[in-house]
Image 1: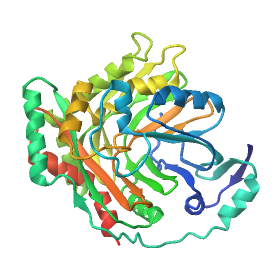
Image 2 (image 1 turned 45 degrees about the vertical axis):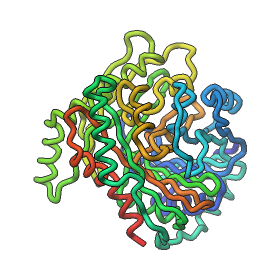
Image 3 (image 1 turned 180 degrees about the vertical axis):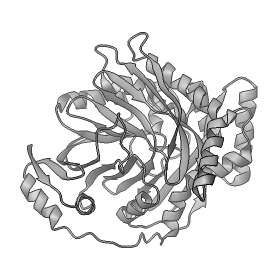
Image 4 (image 1 turned 90 degrees about the vertical axis):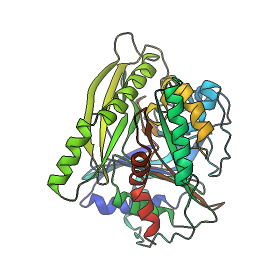
Length: 425
């Protein structure tokens, strides 16, 4: 790969041209931090296109085989995704619902071209960076409507959700679990829409630190995730579970009141602390003894649609432990399962009405330096243009004192931007 850097007078326009250009490839991964910068994230905008080699899970020893793929392609970017149902391999579980979206459980690729876009510059890595730069500059951005044609349905209606909720609380009272994340699917069959335009609309309505447009053949992931699952920077592993949600206010005063109420809510605090304990426990499996720390607890992070309670848990990776082992040890993301984790996942499959697939999994990249950064796949639309199936899930944590009406409304709040994208046609 040749690498060249170019100055950008208008990075926003260049980014939109590059995204338009990338959408024409069979394979593309676009990650946008939307200017949410923290001390843990390294990328402003990342774009990888074209597949010169790839890894697809065959349902057997995925993490070990993925590590072999990483080892066979050193010093390069490897973007991809890990589906929630890899839990079946890790813990000997099963998923009884069909895979309507048709995504594999894992896919990573060696890009033919990588763009690292900053505020005023772009670095292009590929066979012919200058030619690629010119192609992008000459690309016309198409501002078309989403053109959603389909009928959005609830996989689990309100009464079915309340019944599942009641069953989960019964298991909590019996001591089988003490917290669980119950999710529901919204879906449309025989659907068509413009995936790139849907992603642009979603990112406009809900700009988040882990925004992603991922194209895998005729399958698309359109994500507005606010949550980091796991990152590795040098020998430091870091996870930032989100538990606790409040709506945004209509004005600054109401907004502050809602933030204060979120920070003072015993239920939201207990949910967050329970998951912090779960993540700490998961990280212990990969950590040097005594290094697991909750470095930040119960921080309010504000996004365009919601306020969230975020905690940060870190550790030092044990010497000689591979990246994929560290991921496997914490997968699926604890904020999307519950605790104890295996018991919660068994009950999730028993009481939910749909397969999660990519939802509740992770999306991100392995870097040339041996680091990685993955988000939790939430606030995300999945679309299969081949069979016309469109899907997104929303969910929330159930504890012993949770209120079903409030949790149901929180599910709708979390899906607000996704509903709006499909209304915008």
